[in-house]
Image (cartoon, rainbow, N blue to C red; front, side):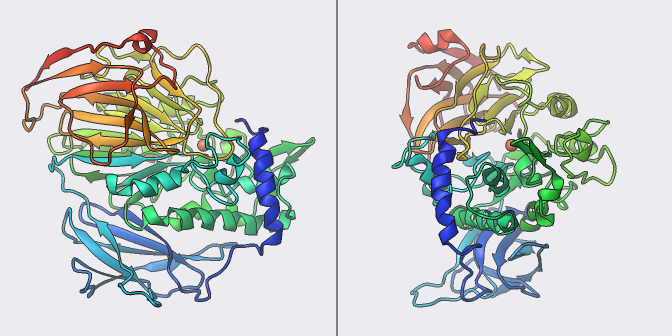
Length: 553
Ligand SMILES: [Fe+2]
C-alpha cells in the first residue's frame, strides 16, 4: 500500500478540521429518523429492508405496496445494537412478494416535513430463475468513505487517483444506479477501522479514547453517502479484512506495537458488519452475512468468506490462529461448514434456469502482485470447487488495482480464452477508491493477465445479455468512461439462444462512453484503451478485428 504517500498528508489536513467538529457526527433532532436505508435480496421472493436510527425501535415496521398511494401492507422485524455503537440497526424481511416486481416502501417514523410527495423509496424483487431477460449488475470492492474526510479531500492535493473535479466511485454509482439492478460489494466497505492507522501516524488530532467516536463517524458517513444507491438497489455485501478488526493484527509504529488491546470491543470480530446487515445466509443455507447465495434471473450469485472458515485446517488471515491475533471468526458451527456449504450450493445449481454462476469474495489468488497480497489458502480452499462446478466468473479485490485475467485453472490458462472456456474467468478490481491510494503491480505480469491498470478508480459493470454472453466493463468513476471491456462466451447448452452463430472480436486502443442500457452485442468482444497494460503485447498493437466464428446450438 502506498500508505506513506502525500495522499495521507492531504487526508491529515482534512481530518485536522475534525478537531473543530463535535465527534461523532450530528445526531438528528429526531433520534428515530430513519437513516441509511439498505436493501438485500432474501430468497427468490423476499426482500430485507434495513436502516439505522439513533434510538431503539422496539418493533421496526416496513409499509409497502405496488402503488405509492397504498402502502397498507406491513412487515415487522427487529433492531439490534452493540457496545460502542451510537445507533441501532433495524432489519425487516418481507417474504412472499411477487418476483420481478417493484414495490414502494417506507419504514417506521418516516415523516414528511414541507414535502409535496410521500418520501417512499422503491425496491424491485429478484427476477425468477429461468427469466433470461438481459440485465446489468454492478460490483465495487475496497471503497471507503468519500467526502470531507476521504478521497475527495485528499485529491485536492492531486495525490490520489481522482482529481478534485472528478466524481468519486460513490458518486459514479449514484449517477448510474438506473443502469444496474443490484450492487455487489465483497469486502472493505467503509474503512472505518483506518482511524487507528491515521492516529498512530499523527494524522488525526484526537486522543486514543476518541477512536470510538471516530470509527462511528466514518462508519456512519459511509452509509449516509451510500444511501442514494442502497435505498433503491439490493446491496449484497461480503466480509473483508477492514470489517474484521481495527488493529489489523497489530500495528507497529515508532517501535511500539499496538495490539488487540487498543481495539475497542465494538471494533473487533466483524462486530459492525454483523450488526448492520442481514444477508440471505439463512435463506440459502449459508451463515449470516459471511457466506450465502441468491438468484436473480439467469444468474446464480455466490458470496464466499475469504477471511475465516477456509476449512480443512487452512487458516484465514483474519483468524486468531493466523498469528496476527485478529480475534475474528470462525463463524461456522464446525470447521468445514463453509466448504461443505459451497460444494452443496454449487452442485445444486440448475444451469438450465441459472446458466451463469458468479462467485465473489474479498482476497485474490490470481494477481500480478507479490505473494504477501494474494491468498494462497483461499486458492487451496476454493479453487477446486470453482473449477469442478464450472463457475463462470470470479470477482475479488483487496489489492488496489484492476486486472482482468483470462480463464485459468490451477495456474494453467484455459486454451479457449473467452471462447467457451471451462475454467473460471477472474476479475480483480480493488479500485473502489480508498484514499490510501492504489497498489503497485509486479512485473512481469502473470501469463493469464490481459489488462491491468492502477491509475484510475472505478467499478465493474456486468451485463448479462443472454444464456451465452456476458460483458464485463471497468467503469472509471471519474468520468464514467469504459476503460476495459470483455465479453465472455459460454456454451451453457441452453435452448433459448436466439442466434445460431456468433463471433469473437478483439480490439485495442479503444475507449467507449458509458451507456446505461447497453445493447446486446452479436459478438463477444475485448476492448481496452491505451491507459492500461495488457498482458498480451500483440493485443496492444492490434487494430484489426479478429473474428472467430463459433457454431453452437
Ligand atoms: Fe482488503
